[in-house]
Length: 213
Image (cartoon, rainbow, N blue to C red; front, side, top):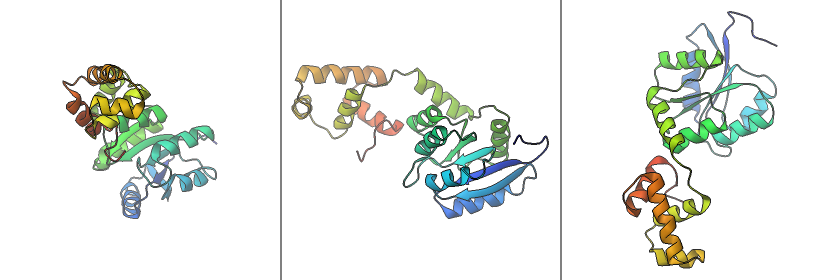
């Protein structure tokens, strides 16, 4: 059923922290143009709620136990549920932003965003626009311009972060030292860094690899 002109924007909040859910519900509830119809503590719970009622805008945390924000967006897309999504998170690595947008997010905000900016974002996304603060937008643009690393390069990059030599990496992967060296040179070029140590450090900072992988 289409929304009537002038009616409040219906919002569902999805975050695994109860204090965050309560705080957002209380804060957004002060705005007459917004109506928080509920909150969910997980992606799974959000999907169940979305099958009952479709809000205009979903405020979605990125990292949650079980289904992540990206997994939740992909599941929403597969289910054919038509709701617009703003990521609201504490994480802002280049890869976090890129993966969220690739999965279908129409907006990306950090949790320390002001109420005014949050309302502006909700209003814009509800109107069919996209909303990315200037710093997030510039980082997204830079990430999209970079050539993607291949699966083999990502595999080697994760190993580089642990400090092995090319010979050790080659032995582990069953490839020659020269092949490893070529992959490392390609990684350095794509990440626009000066050496393998900087490549590993940069990859961790940007969220390309996880230090715990």
